[in-house]
Length: 369
Image 1 (cartoon, rainbow, N blue to C red):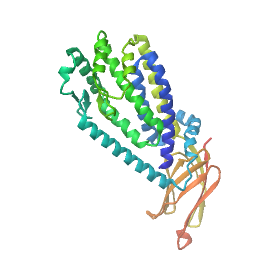
Image 2 (image 1 turned 60 degrees about the horizontal axis):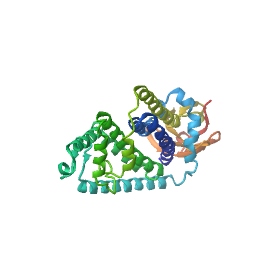
Image 3 (image 1 turned 135 degrees about the vertical axis):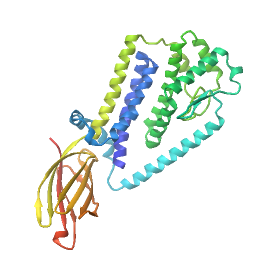
Image 4 (image 1 turned 60 degrees about the vertical axis):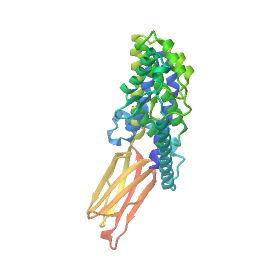
């Protein structure tokens, strides 16, 4: 579990670093709306990374080695002994982060005056009591249009996904920095959508921003006009003209490629094929099968009433972690786990009262050629 978590955090870290750099150029070349869409690469990469290795395509396996070297750099620091303690620490951190989010969300919900969009499945717009007095009719229309864009894009639901990722990777500073930039890009994308529909009302839109008292705390998954998002940047972005049709098409292609490459890279990072040479001794008989399998994929061996199920997980460039379930006559007799060095033999022995009740397994794991 801890190895998988560190590998996933390494993938997410590299991806977030790339997005944080790319978003600057995407804003300049293609506008805020396409810069916001590129953040979809993060949950996509996580979903793909969690897929069983058998779903990885052959080209992904072929490019897995260099991608795995990047992912393995984070796991090389992890010794096998404290895995359980690290898993416990991670779980406690997740719970603590979730409670912190829940507390902040509940507080924001009690004090939220709007304008804002609240609710995940049935979002609704909330406005302050003095909404009609504070804002002109034109400003009211623009504010409501902004919140309608949030609803149409299901932004509160995506904000909940963002909060979940922050809980899972509470220890990762780039995740929290990325979350803040993601929320800023979300607001900038909504601003751009409203300006595209109301190109002659930039001044009124900016006035509405200035009339709204800025909050000192983000309300988590709420999409609201009162926010900690940089007001100066939002107002300056209002002057940016919408990209032309050809540039918008080019931007869609670029963003599509970036998202596709991130998902493909995550698939490659969890892929990897290995060759296992076995020497099995059961009931006085010896057999020497050879198995090819992928990291994370279950493979099984059955010999004279003995049945073994095995899963290889990558620890680093030199080591694999093997989980096993050994059964005799359909009953589980052992669950030994091994830390294997690639190219070096390892042995598992399940002893019994007699030779017929003894199972011996010797294996050597190497990267498939």
